[in-house]
Structure formats: C-alpha cells, structure tokens
Image (cartoon, rainbow, N blue to C red; front, side):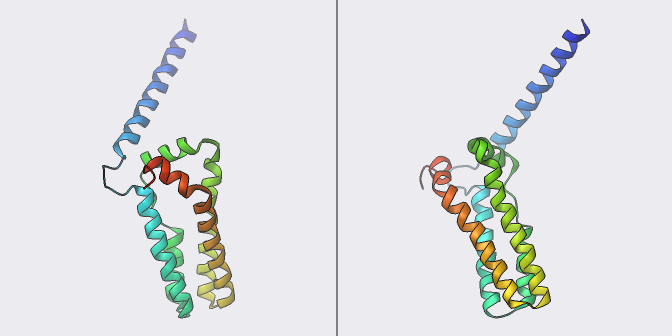
Amino acid sequence: MKLRTVGWSLLGLVVAVVAAGAIVVAKDRPGPGTPDGLLATMQQLDTNTRAAGDAIAARNWPLVAELADRLNHHVEPPLGQKLRVMLWLRTQAPNFRGYDGKLRTAAVAMGAAAKAGDGQAVSASYAQLQSACTGCHEKYQAAYVAHFQGGK
C-alpha cells in the first residue's frame, strides 16, 4: 500500500514539474516582431566583441579588460527560451553550450592579459574568442534561424 502511495506522489510531482516547465517555456516566448532573448544576447556579444577589437587596436588595455569582463558575464536568454533551445538541440546541447564556455575562457584570458599589458596574449585570446563565435555560428546559426525564426 505504501509503495502505491509513493508512486502516486512521484507521478504528481513529475506532472507538476512538467506543467511548471511548460508555463515557463510559454511565458518567455517572444511576441511577433520581438527579438528573442538569444538574439539580444548575440547582439550584445557582437557589440562588445567589436568594441574589444577597436580597443585592442588602440592598445587601450583598461577598456579591453572591461569589455572582456562584459563578454564573460554576458546576459543570458530567458529560462523558457533556454529550455526550448536545449530541447531542440537534444544531444547537441552540450556542444552548443561548450562554445559559450570557450568564449568565456577566452574572455577571462583576454582580460588578464589586458591587465598585464601583454598585447600578444590579448591578441591570441581575442582570436580564440572569435573562433568560438565563428564555430558556433557555422554549426548552429542557419538551423536556429530556420527553426525559430522561420528562416528570417
């Protein structure tokens, strides 16, 4: 008898978690014409990456360090969108997230090199950061746009 009660309790818990997840996913869905959270994140990363490139060219190490910190601590998309993307990616989700990890690692290295005034290391880290961005875009961007934005 106790086993049956535990089973029903677990089933109820699973149903509640799934329902809560569905609410979060639906709540964070952008309206028509509204950029999604991942797009906003990518736009912010693009702006900061371009600014970092300009700051590197100007050898403005304090600004490079500040931008590296912004790149490392970038805004995350809303939870509902993250869940939709991870469900879409399925087994590719860890690889997709790995590109963000590579970006963050490169940004940390770039910031440390900028604080040390090491232009060679800053440039090498910036190249790694760009490589992470390019790798992710080449692998996922077209499919993401086609799936979530109707090919726009």
